[in-house]
Length: 621
Image (cartoon, rainbow, N blue to C red; front, side):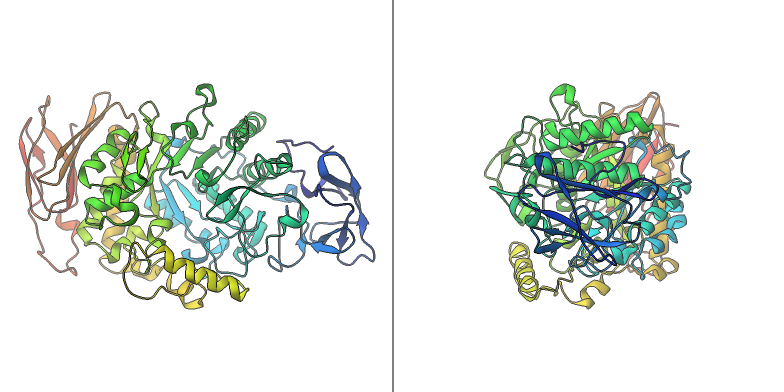
């Protein structure tokens, strides 16, 4: 039997030798299987092997050939492990030879995880063209901004051309309308040439609803568990070994064959697996073996709302070994602090005290009673390093979870935007930006799909209305299937030359550069941190240090100036950045044209006046 190997992909069609194709299909419940190659007069029968695999070797298939599998002489379907679907989710698959990719990134080292400054983007709306090639044209801009890694929302083939990516049904295939596998290869190669790492968002918790033909091949799903998308992916029920191999090979393929630097695994709390070895732990083991074989460094990042340290603890501590996780609780606490209504999932968060707790403890809920969950929730991550947590003031979910998809720029003042950016950047965690936030993009980021099935489109519309019932009392939900909804979500790059957008970009550049340059901000030692909360003044004092380098960050969330007593120290504090400085206040905005900025120096244990809705950062040298 063809076994899992981390040295090369084996599922689907591969080309281990010149003019020789190897075919491996998992269809454990089929009585007969064959492959139909377009342009060939007859189908080629596959040989049944153990554990449900069907295999063949042939010299009749070339890269670029279209093909389908035929099960039991009557059911014709595309390859579930297809790398390319040039005619969409319902069309035939295309054979691809990834060994022919022309890589020039042999000397690319990948960044240490603690140096990641992430920039999340959606390929279809990041540019007007909506392609991988168009992203390449913006890499110099991203480099100048200061980010070190781009995080691409899911690209697995989905129906038609408009989708967030979480409705993918071919996990191995790069979306054809984005540029397919060749476009992705070219983009990753270009990113590495510019010194940018690439993180790819992958979905291992469900398949999309249209074009998912896996059920015709075998038990990819199980009715043992219920998920928000229906049946769970089968990681621990009968025939689960073939499914586990399918997703493990998928992870290895992106890292090995496409040189992706890190994977972001979507909503792992929705992965149901009670096997002795969790699927995440199995993927971890295989990726570790891959790194040993190639010498390249890769990271596994998860999205999880369980506040369970097991996911990010190493296997030596009985964990799954994930390198980092998104931390929504920091976002929720920050948003409530700046005025978000305590509705829906924000109801659990009190504001500034919870924000201070997240700075200190990462998880806000690490054993306390959660009102929204109606139970005690979470566990401490006291011993986990700062680079294992990714924080943000907005992301695709937190914007799209709003009925009208409003970005922060449409909800808060310009000063609050600067303050939230500062709150993220001075944290002892990895920062993530969502595309366009750095110039206060006014366009929304709405939820959009382009399903072709009428009943499914209507179900999506109704589902969105129900989803927003806790957040919005009135108004119409934008139609997810409308072309206009998608177009309205595209970035407006021409705003970069206008105010106040230009000023905000420069502010972000300065803030990111400060984080990179100052040792106390760059090093993510959570032990070297003190947090003080002045609740009545709605102010946080965040003190971080590395060796003899110290920073003191004063964050005033109040609408009035606040007088703050600084802690006793050995010497004067020297100002590094003040968001209320005139240079960060464009004249086109309403309000006072000038606010008295904080002094350049503050004596030991001195008193500091912090302007409304601003952040001031001081250093000791």
